[in-house]
Length: 152
Picture 1 (cartoon, rainbow, N blue to C red):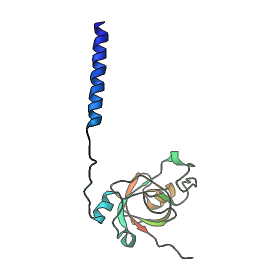
Picture 2 (tube, rainbow, N blue to C red):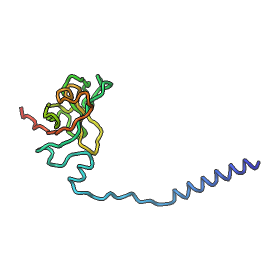
Picture 3 (cartoon, rainbow, N blue to C red):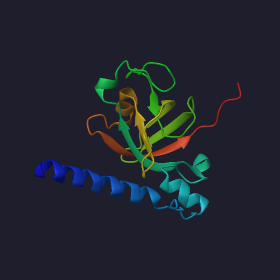
Picture 4 (cartoon, rainbow, N blue to C red):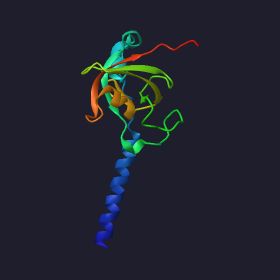
């Protein structure tokens, strides 16, 4: 009987605590407004001038387990194609990627999304990583430049 009484008291205490918490009014946190360029860099995107001059960042490449899986664009990932994943460039955009260590360059088409990170990043296909010369290392410092669309 005594243990049942303790259990009821504990349950009653939890109920009262939860009810009192629901009565407390909270206000949502207000984020401080940052200047446009700072906000875009912190959000994982490059500054507004990225299109003209490009941006330095990190390139990685897809793991073998992604072979044959569907990309965001709906096509299957094929490691022998020159494709890439980027967090915010429109799908179908062509991008020139230059390895800053050896000056190798490759043009890839964005057909997938990768998660946003603080540092600008692009995930490349195995063929693109091979052309840039960092296939065995996993990542490389690169310069990413968006190419203008052909009107034809």
